[in-house]
Length: 223
Image (cartoon, rainbow, N blue to C red; front, side, top):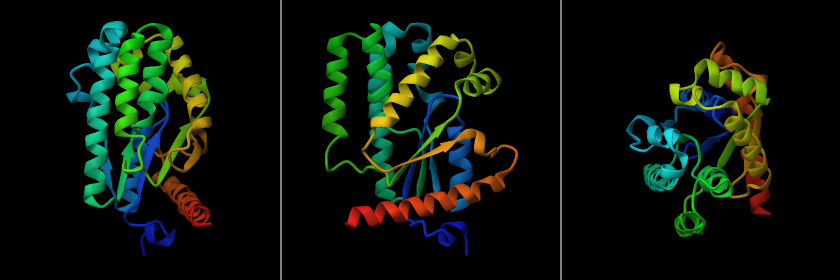
């Protein structure tokens, strides 16, 4: 019996990993998918035509980047559910509007007109009964100091060149966002409670928590 069966995780489940840059979403996605025998879904960063330009000029490219992300994530979400589930997904579609687009309009690096256009499109595509929401969102959290240190040590060059003040603001916005998020059940994990890069066996207690959480969420849904 594998870990998925041991902890009663449905073979068609879709689990999304969320959290700010530096919390280890990609590592969690790989380890969790391997342990559950699920497929993975990653951001196609290298294929993104706007990302490098965006980090050089937020104001000029923020709207283009958000529209690109929305389209790509929507297509990927559709693909996952057409497969019949059994996926671990690196980053959610909800973070784009709840954190990034909102931050840019509030800071003046996206116009109000562009933000309204983007938000209306997001609402029409995602926030409907027809959109296939994940069974569980795992939110990875930790202290700001630890996260900034990880970005400095492991981040992409464009991330390492970004001022720490940007990551501090992103961190605070993520905390505010997750506290009001309700599109699907949320399991919060502290990144200082495990180290999957040094010990892959740390994944089993995480899977045990996922199994218990999904079981309890299903019971609540049926009430």
